[in-house]
Image (cartoon, rainbow, N blue to C red):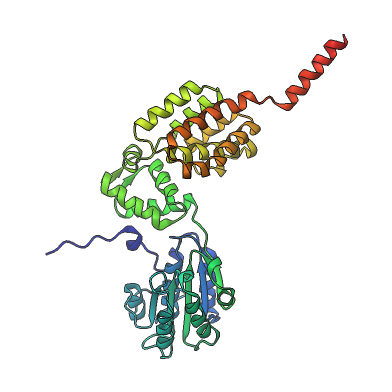
Length: 386
């Protein structure tokens, strides 16, 4: 007997009810109320970053409307319609990937299929993912059916780039903007998945994976699966960092200390040591830029909760912010940001990084605060008068 096929966590734990969708309560509640009040539109546009639940919500909506045992606007996930939609084999629910089916012929195929009444369900659904990839001709063909749709037809358009969709299309849809998930929300979901799969994982590892997800739960679950493959059923922070080949935050704190003290010799030596040990220069540049951004947030707002970091790292930022003034941090950030385009076209990024470190080490040492200069001049003036 063959072993059961492995299923990635993003699919295995994909929400099957509105109540299971993470963080998109506004959209879930609105769609549920539309079903309960029988105020269902013929076309919807779901926009938002990757991995936040656009097609998931579309499928749940299709199930809830066509469910034979619907309760409080939620699908039962047990009837024939729910089961077939979940498995992706329902004859009245079509999913089209506009990234690979973007021509006018593909939209005409939808028009032809839309002419016929549903075979088993109450409504016929067309879920078009990455709809912004359609050609102008395809959009024009789609516009016709959106203007005069049959009563049994519902379109759900999903996109990561809503600004690329013609206004004539968006104006005929109810638009829902899904937002990126917070690190805490992703972390809670990862903790649930780890518990269900009997995987032991510490809080620092949960935070790191959640942060790397960059607001997309699907991406975070993908990293979690890779971590399980590498670490087994016990994921610890040290092993996870080695596996992901991520630099320790400590290197940015140490580099910042060299810059604050104007210690060019140790700053250059430490950078070369990191580079010899395999640290990617662009990764180092992005890390040190993000480091000073965090220091600026602490210095100007004194609110560590604005940082996407662990509690231990937040405490370190609060302490290091005391060694800089706001003006000093802004001058350093200006140099870093202006160097971004230079990195892109540089044939020798190592030399560029070394010269930039030299500039960062001397920039605050060479600039005298204006108030100090005025005080010195006034003291000199009094001395000369005396």
